[in-house]
Each structure stands twice: as C-alpha cells, then as structure tokens.
Amino acid sequence: MFTLTRDDGYLLSTDPERLDLERVHRWLATDAYWALGRDRATVERAFAGSIGFGVYRPDDRRQVAVARVVTDRATFAWLCDVYVDPAERGRRLGTWLAGAVRDHLAEFGVRRILLATNDAHEVYARAGFTPLPDASLWMQLDQRVTPLTGNESNTSTPLTVEA
Image 1 (spheres, rainbow, N blue to C red):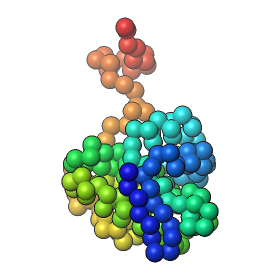
Image 2 (cartoon, rainbow, N blue to C red):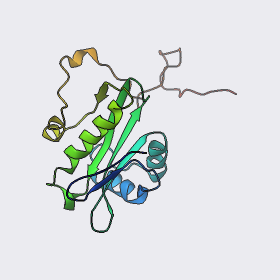
Image 3 (cartoon, helix red, strand yellow):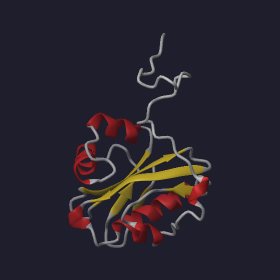
C-alpha cells in the first residue's frame, strides 16, 4: 500500500478498504461525463481489478477524491476515473493525485501513463502530462460495436458462444 500526506493534512492512500465505493459510484454515475449511468457492480469490478487511489479530508478523513489506475505494474498504466468532489475543487487535489499516481508507478518502473480528458488538461499538465505527439499512432477497439463473428456480411445476428 502507498500513502502520502500533504502539508495541509490531506491524505492519499491506495488501501482498497478505505475507498468509499458507494460515494465513488455516486460521483461517477451521476456527475462524471465519461461514466454517467455506470452501475455499482461495474464500479466495484473496475476498482477490484485496478489500483484505486483515494484522497481523504484532513479533519474527518472523509473521501473527497478518487482515481483508478489500470496497469501491468511494469511498463504501462492508464489513469482513469479521476474525480474530485466539487466542494473540494480549487485546492489542486487533482494535480496532487495525478502526481502521486505518477510517482507511485515510477517505483514499479512504469514509464508510460496514458489518460484521456475533455476538460482538465491543465490539471494534468501541472503533473507533467503532455498531449500525445502523434495521436494517429494510437487506435482503439470500442466493444459497443457489433462483435466480429467471422461472417461480417450478416452483422444483425449477435455473436453466440457455445460451451
């Protein structure tokens, strides 16, 4: 586990027992443009398979921010589900959180961390993140598209798996 305390008392921890997943689910499902409507079970599975970072307020240790990192702990990481409670914004908790993620992953030798954002470029830039120099190198597979079946001329039939 990784813990870090800021000079003003905010605590950051990767202890999964500390994460308030009910609160995290509410934040993501109702206020995060990338996760609107995400169900609780998906949030729980996502955090169970990732490194979760929680930030906790100094006075009552209530969780006020979260981030999730999907990583092999060797070469690559994806920083996602970064959220700071609206009442705590303006304290640079997002930048501190991104920097702590960067520093923690460096301990494993992870040299490439990716993230995507619509509106928080400056937050991440303060932690050293930069735009991809040639985004045309990157590709994605969006599983919301019709799965490949080997018979693409008939894409109206869903893919089935026989046991």
